[in-house]
Amino acid sequence: MAANSSPTLTRGALSGAVAASAIAMLFYNVMPLYLGSLQDAKGFSSEQIGIVGSVFFVGLNLVSASAFFWITRVEARLTSLLASVLIALLLPASAALTSYGAALAATLVIGGASGGLAAIAATLIGASAQSTRWFGIKVAAETAAGVILLFALPATLIPRFGFMGTALGMAGVVALLIPLVLLLGRGSIAVAGADAPGREQQVAAARRHDGSWPVWRALGATLIMFLGGSAIWAFEERIANVHQFDAEWVGQVLGISLIASAIGSLAGGALGVRLGTSRAYWIGTGLMILGVLGVAEPSANPTYYAIGACLFLTGWGVAVPLLYARVADTDPNGRYIALSIPAIGVGSIIGPAMAGFLVAGGSIPALQWTSIGAVLVSAILMLDTRRNRTPATSLP
Image (tube, helix red, strand yellow):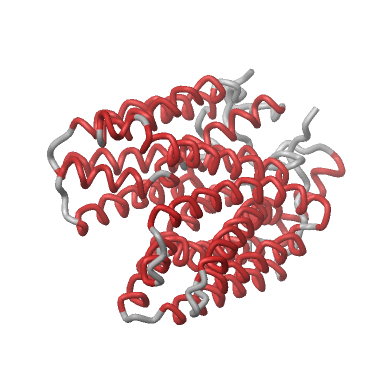
């Protein structure tokens, strides 16, 4: 295939994109465990550990935001393979480092490689004829990889190897996924609709005429959703601590809720195909709101908390693939979908920081209603975004 041709979006290639995305988001999904074991091993302060997490997002956001300019110029499979190998090597290397500055530098590079992988995966999946369904599979795979490590590492590698065990476990998952990344087709990612013949070319021209406003609304909905959702997720354990729930029980509840999130992601893709993105998204946000009400319910009832945690992440799982799908649906030229990654990153930075100030002030109800307000604003933005995309290619 010519170097400037677009990869053929077979099921194998889309599976490769899903694997690339799971690698890209692995650090994010395992971050609480990663940072905790890093602090235990290196003795870094809580402030230093927080900066490590922020540096990952700096790398992720810088590279994924710049993807708007390079996403059509790189060879998808080769770039994804190099980024995946780099992550697999840097994870155990970072565990061997003793300098705080070196740890920050390694984390920045891991974040950058993750951002590039995530941008390529999102762009390829967004170009498929069944993008809504595949975005659901993508988010479910990301969550599943995180769940496996969150349950397995504390019982296996961490007791024996400490932080190096965390890094080796993560690198092992990356190594297992790399063969799937090789399923990505050769060639660069063509701008959606650029080579569409006849009727499809006319529709692509109409999309360009509509401009970029609808996709910016979808990106705004993505940022605001992650702002509100990550604010609650970051402090779910702290809310349970305030209510004096048993720590081991809380850990089990959060683990089960992550499984519910993976199931919700698969359901979100199917619901989006059946009901349309907006209706399915409101189902997801409705579940999230009910979940927030249960988690932060003032009577400190553990049953409400457990049900709320599961409802919240089920709704989250339903909503997130629909956000990706809406950005892809309204993308005027096939490049904006890569910006969904920095939108997620920025929202995930602002949300926990905002929640920290609210909780520090002793106001869990303020956190609760701020999160609900953000979710509702996101849902309203999704209502006003048009579905006008013609897929660049279809599955065989």
